[in-house]
Amino acid sequence: MDSAQKKSYPAPRPLKKVRPNIFTYQGKEGRDQFMVRLKYNEKTIRKWGFPNITKAQAWRKRRQAAIEEGRLFPEEIQKQEAQAKIQRVTFGVYAGIWMKDCRARGLKHTTLMRYQGMLDAHLLPAFQKDALIEINRIRVRELVADLNEQGLKPKTIKNVLGGLSALFAQAIEDEIVDHNPASRPSKLIKVPKRAEHVQVFTHEEEIHLLETAHTEPFRHYYPFILCLFRTGLREGEGVALMPEDLELNERYVQVRRNFTAGQMSDTPKNGKQRTVDLSPDLTQALKNHLVIREAEGVLSNTQKPQWLFTTPQGGIIRSNNFRDRVWKPLLKAAGLRYRWVHATRHTFATRMIMDGANLVYVQEQLGHSSIQITVDTYTHWINLAKRTHTLEVDRLIKAPPENEGVTVGVTKTQEET
Image 1 (cartoon, rainbow, N blue to C red):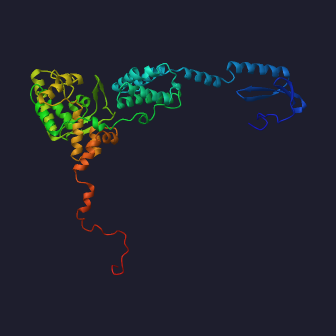
Image 2 (cartoon, rainbow, N blue to C red):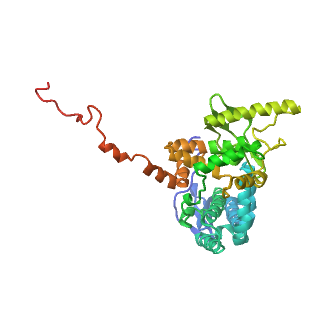
Image 3 (cartoon, one colour):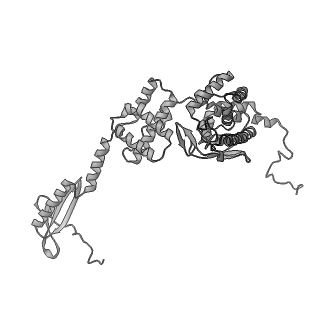
């Protein structure tokens, strides 16, 4: 486009008001022309070059009507309407949208159940009819105080805050709110160290329990129970093992799935598959288990079960049924006080720590998402292990190795050269 074709605007010149917001001025070649002025959202819009006042008035009338109807600046009207709509979004309405999105993103069944339980029991009763943008940090503190008065444990309250924070994090992405009032839950509730809640079996108790499990009527479940003690797997991870997950010659198992709350997940709890080493006694027990199961299948002319460990009828092991019909009677038969099945996992971890295993190795075997979880969970045993092993400062009284103590970087004397 050459200079003659470019759109030009008149330079400032004397204006004469002839109608409200309509002015006349002298245009090119000395002819009178008209300029129209409009105001919108504190901005002034000017339109130049009308040949007569009739056309200027007609243009201004059309534009003024368009402004009033929202057709001239639709983005502004849309923004105002969107803001008004956001202000009408209640917590209850958005909670439904959030849960639908959680399901669409493929969150684990147990996570969905936990979120829905938190909403039903604690969050919806507190915020259901409130506009989402009106829920602030003060309201969240009030929620924490109310839950505490109801007798909920700090850990439970922190979990509720975690769910609330996840909901607001999505609301920020959806541009409904601009801040998360439930962020940094540790600032709102203090949770005691987890070590005091960790229940374990002593070494003697573990041996006695396994010996009892090797007798009737518990013998069928002995390989499963031994696997939990020797690998530290979560109960659902052990239930979800298949024979093809085993590499007995290399002495490891691939943990790929998790079975919990009646649902099979295609990943363990932390969402990542892992390799877990097998102890010699467990490796041999699993070999014997597979041989016996093969023989039983031939004798009964039945197909091989899909799962590595099953009920006597060949079905998948369900947590509640195993706890009530096997685990509780087993502990009673062994004369041991009750501890939940998860205590086998804690027993594995604490035994490893007390025997001096590297914490990163323990974390990897357990499938913790971070080393901090391992440290926080087993702080007591980590500190105890440090006191029962040789202290690092004891190295100071040992004889130094040969040549130790030679200063590095000392300039040689003339005799040495």
